[in-house]
Length: 266
Ligand code: IPD
Image (cartoon, rainbow, N blue to C red; front, side, top):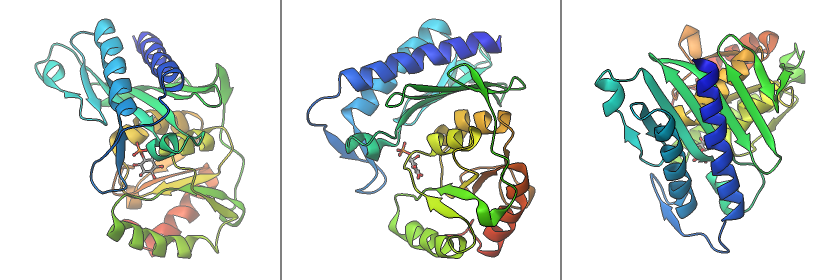
């Protein structure tokens, strides 16, 4: 069943990726969400609609949770389907808005509350990251694995910031505590691609407070299947409270540092 779900996720992500590249208008219409810097364009909503149509063709009774408001939980809650799709039509919307090539289409399938399948497509690089629970992670069909980095001081760490000014002020304090301890920091602008970068050895660790499920549902599975350790603080699951992912040897020291810095607090 899960391979079938992966095929559906990949086909929908590819259709959306082609649309977002080919139909990008000269000027984007921008509306704001939680804050004036949290943006949504007509392309986010159109891509989410297109993905929803594809997913519904394949599984008419599946539920869909989408970043841009698609929340069709009725099918799953009525028991007709155990599948819920978790969709971010454009992760890295600000990069897309500025025509920076670091944004992705992210689609995960959750079955009975467990993420079983993830697909993250980076149309700018032509890179498709995929994973099926228990089946490893792949980049364009080839198996991938996290780096062998085993020292926090040599680790290249990705992170990101929320859209709320108060949260950002706190995130900048945490960042000043992390920066002197690690090799360097990258803020690339799309959480799903940060986690995929970890999965294929382009980063050694990643943390962020304030992510939404659609940012990490697919890529969290991809990183895990590539051998990353993924979690929150003190044994809690990775979540919006705090999402930590790293090579197995870097996870504990990164976790200890973030716990010291109280990175789970605003
Ligand atoms: C955002 C990106 C960004 C992360 C933010 C997310 P969006 O998602 O993933 O890298 O730092 O926390 O909200 O808004 O572009 O879909």
